[in-house]
Image (cartoon, rainbow, N blue to C red):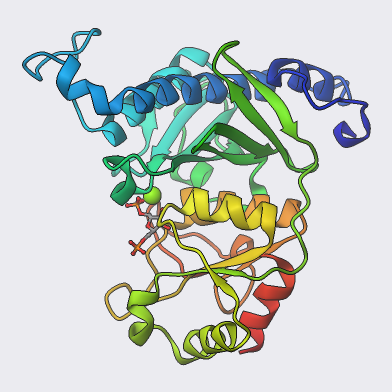
Amino acid sequence: TAQELALPVGVTLDRFIMLSQSAFPYATGELSQLLRDIALAGKIINREINRAGLVDIAGGNGTDNVQGENQQKLDIIANIRFIRALKNGGEVCAILSEEDEDIIHTGNDHGKYVVAMDPLDGSSNIDVNVSIGTIFSIYRRVSPIDGPATREDFLQGGRKQVAAGYILYGSSTMLVYSTGDGVNGFTYDHSLGEFILSHKNICSPQNGTIYSVNDGYINDYPAFVQQYLTKCKEKSCTARYIGSLVADFHRNLLRGGVYLYPSTKKTPEGKLRLLYECYPLAFIAEKSGGKAIDGFGAILDIIPTSFHQRSPIYLGSSTMVDDVMKC
Ligand code: AHM
Ligand code: MG
């Protein structure tokens, strides 16, 4: 398997993809190319984010940017950039984005894959220079090749993901992904313009002391969540909540912790979207030894019915997720 290959920390993402693919002699290279396209989109979005604070100053009258496009908010820019990178890459026949109601047909009807994504998650943090992220989920299409993609391509269920991951734009920029065989993390080296393998075969700590939840809504949470949070406080656990799912998830993945977004009175189905927030992070959680549940069962077992449906989510270190379940 890819994990058994002697891939030293420090190899580039391109080399990692190439070497791990050679472990699967019948692979055609399309998924590898798609992962490279996602990495490229991540670099482009990273560049936009890095100069975000300057755009109003550097953008003259605030009308057009260098590409001759209207100056737009970063989440819209990220959406445009991501779609363009995947269209140009050629491997993806359709995209589902948090930013668009319906699926986007790329025109690459021969592409074997579809991608569901949240191009820039953490809306409350985008304009204030706090960590944000991109989340993506990849399926092999079930509709006939050379025709248009269909709803069914996107509604296969979390267990059918062939790869998933996220890009975290934090104190450094990281790409973390899995094709089902372990989870690996790559840190972006600006000077080289490359993602470098920095976190090989990430294993989620079984247990931890961090809990991440919006405490302000506690009175709106179901009784079992209130009970779990009381226990966390009795045990003097550490509260950490950035309000960017990717950043909160990533910290807990490395340190050990649980992230909770329960149903509330305002959002009885929870807030986070199943297809491009919950499924991909649940995939990463499980592939790294952690867990992700909706309060009844595994997130990945939820049968999807619509593109933008929501779900409550409890995810992270397995013992902590079990403890939520016990409540
Ligand atoms: P968004 O897709 O509008 O950015 O919302 C998702 C974000 C997550 O990143 C974050 O964990 C959560 O919403 C925070 O929500 P709240 O402000 O309700 O705590
Ligand atoms: Mg989002």
